[in-house]
Image (cartoon, rainbow, N blue to C red; front, side):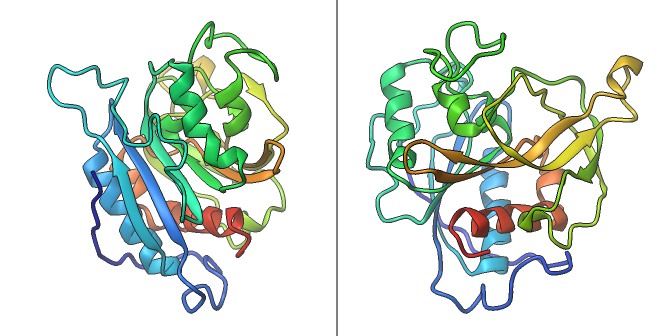
Length: 266
């Protein structure tokens, strides 16, 4: 169930990783991936090589790639039913797509380490996972179907057609230090239905969207959040449906800085 891959990715963003990040004790990173709609085998490789080259992380993967005929939106991830899955790790990167996984016992186990204080980085379809009830409508804190969104920090219910996303800095956040705004290749711009007290890092807009009405819609695409009684640090970013976006060195710089921020090393 676990896989290790080695490699290296060039660093391009100015001040992308603080001095000393490579020489500090390596962070133990658990990357959770698998489910529908994405090439997770390729994404595991991209994320591992990107983090290892930037922050010297020790990376482990917990994943499940659905087999033909299985319900891909309910992947049998090894973390499900195991509230101790993050024991020994400094941070968990959630990159799974469990869109139809609505079992509350599963959700409670996934959230358990983060309620205890294990930091998290949530990427792309992680925001569209573990949904139940009327998740297409805005929820509020305390609602029965709000638990996952309270953790991620922003409730998103969907996206429009893929199109390049023009990124902009949302404010003076340490994760965005040295960030130079750019436009991605075609990607999905996730909507924002509800906000649970996040601090925006980046916003995105699709000026080339096929539907003219969508061209002015600007959404928060990267943010930080403090979750639960332990005020656990959580970084979220909705970008990177496609490997071309994820493999962009500027994207990987952001993920690496998000990991460092979440673990208090930025």
